[in-house]
Image 1 (cartoon, rainbow, N blue to C red):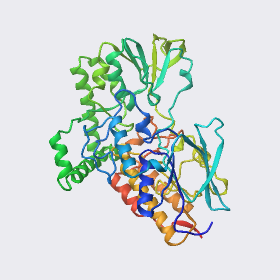
Image 2: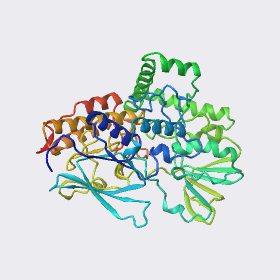
Image 3: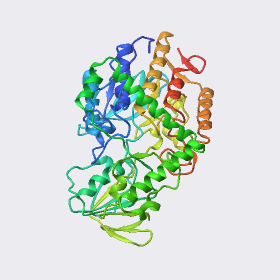
Image 4: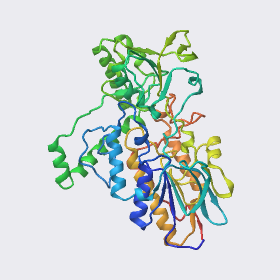
Length: 498
């Protein structure tokens, strides 16, 4: 391939990561990236998740692009439909729809050493044969999303009633006067249970561990507030920044949980749980619904009605695991039987190294899926990987958050990727990739930063890999992540291909 100033770019996925990458590549280089989307619409997580009560637990002014501020949010914490509409608006504004190849699954990407390009293999899901189509690109952005492949435990496949996963919601299912069982109590269960309980005859929650609940400071924006945010210069930016720094302060609990601040937060959360259940007339549920680990070890859920819903007469909380299933009867480890009509799986996602179902093969035949399955997922700047030239993996290992908006993380990663591309184009390089020693140093530093944080206090969560190592999170503030990406290390820490 000849050196040129106009490389080709492939973007996999059209969620927040994919849209951001495509927009910035166009803005900085005038390149219209080819976006591959497995569904028939953009939106990623906010297109797919439509279960009752689905909403974001980060304030809307912060859970949005800094370059596309929206003064028209109806709620402080928006529901999935409003976030989805925002993303479609952004895509239309930047004319991205004409760049998207819908109903197209990227099954494999492979770096071809001889051509110094990425071989991207796709299949059109709308064609009868779904034959593999091969194309070549200079750069690849993978916006796969860490929460994209629903985890469906095989033990529940023998249930003969109606089964639905919260991430694969079927709106045609009628829950009215039905006996419902919910498996799991993560974010989706916390949001869905209060809504399902309203119509179900009875709802049984099967929880392995309790979830810390923080009251949601939800409110509706008035027309006057929207007017001010829209027409007073810089007010929307100042408001967003205020929310950002408010959430940065939350990190004190996560990074310093064993200090006075952490102990104070723990006592506060314990008091909130107890007071809510006492007010609801169910003090007997306090031991069951109070977690035995510090707040933040698993993701904290925000809700104004979850604990209250579990205190209702038509809800039962079971802490025993399901041992077996007989038709529509669930039998827990204590031998208790529960006949239900509908089984709701709030069992989260198969993070699988943040790679979804995509096979990624780098230089010299290195399979990233195999490498990350067997070893700690090493990266450089949480976006680039040794052995994978011109490849940027968004929201991968070391980039998720427990206290703030991942949209800001995405923008930092894309900005870092743009700097890498500009460096390569300025020096007329065919490709660049981080050096192995730089990657090892970076990963070891991240591991050191996890020491003493709340995430290493022993609870089970998707933040951990199968060896119990924390790998899914950035161990600091969002500000520190921005600084981390700002200091690219280009030149001394990269291999350059001419």
